[in-house]
Amino acid sequence: MKNAVTVSQDFKKPHLEVSGDSRLSGELRVSGAKNSALVLMTASLLTKSPIRVDNIPQLTDIDGMANILLEMGVKLNRSTNSIEIQADEIHHVELPYDLVHGLRASFFCIGPLLARLGKAKIPLPGGCRIGARPVSEHIRGLKALGAYVTVEHGVVTASIPGPTKKLKGSHLVLDCPSVGATETVLMAAVLAQGRSTIENAAQEPEVQDLANMLNKMGARISGAGGPKITIEGVEELHGCNYKVIPDRIEAGTFLLAAAITRSIVRVSPVIPDHLRAVLQKLRDCGCKIEIENDSIKIIPGEIIGIDITTQPFPGFPTDLQAPFMALLSTAKGTSIITEKIYENRMQHVGEMQRMGASIKVQGNTAVIEGVPKLSAAPVSGGDLRSSAAMVLASLSAKGVSKVEGLHHLDRGYSALEKKLNKAGANIIRNN
Image 1 (tube, rainbow, N blue to C red):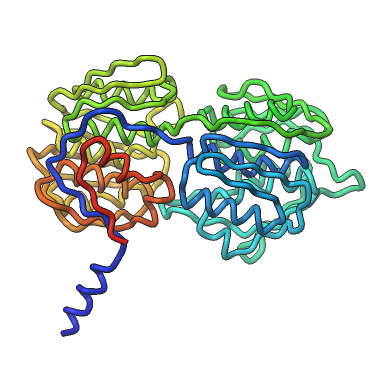
Image 2 (image 1 turned 30 degrees about the horizontal axis):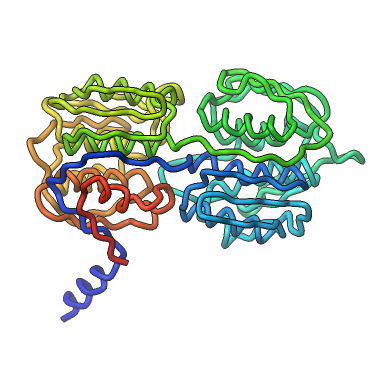
């Protein structure tokens, strides 16, 4: 009787029922970039004037950031795909733990709050448990700009000493090209006195997107998208309207959904240059890629094994490592995937093995022997991207799979099952 109760409770967990042997067709539409949208929302704290951000994805992480801004006294007006933000009055510079602990992007508030108000107090953030993602580089960057920063009992407190309450321009060389640290320093430096430079800066498209919006607000930033960024501090910023770039990780996930189901699909809108490394690996493993303006058509052939090493942009993105492993589990021959960004990003391997994948892991390297067919199984994603990988694997497997971990999936994919169903998948959400 005890076992029967346990099974009943498990069945009630939110999950997707994914019918395998799916074939997709038509077009898969890409939402705005989650990792851009979250940072752009925090950048609105740098001005009293209204900011309108369009192409905002409908995600639980976006909801979380909106709640954090509301807690600070910021005015928000949301519609389906846009958000209007006005931070003319900020009542709290101390963020509550219960709103912050599940959203790593909450830490991005520290730069704007410090630059504009001279102080901030933020608990260390949470998010996916995929390894050490320390904020030490963020803190080092803020200290270089003249901030006094302490970390006690899991809370980061930052302030600007002296009467001016203004940060001062500085030269900073990052130990590693951290996207988060680059963005934190960028937002703090735009209102600093004098010139700042960031060397070994992250080159990701999301960094470029942030710099583009800040420049539209009146900042003076040059070099974003390259390894050295220069910021000339300005006295104040003003409001603007801005549109978030398409989500390159969602676009890559859709391309992999087409490849694993051996389906011809068009994915749009995209910025093809943001997907260069991913497109090359798809070509290498047997897919034909046709690019036309802001869309990509994928025509899968026989999928063969390849080697992948994750790297900072413009290299292969760590966020597509798990989804690509799902594809290579069905490839002909042997593949090797080496994870160089996060040390705990192989959590999906055990779940893929449950579906019949042949994968061996040693350290940060996985050796995948392709199998002719995966088998349906109950699986769960332990983080955002592994959850997506479980959905992709289930699309190609024989039978009906039950995929749990939707609280992870919904952080980064807007209505994933609805988009896939529109293209021919058979996925049922059970909440």
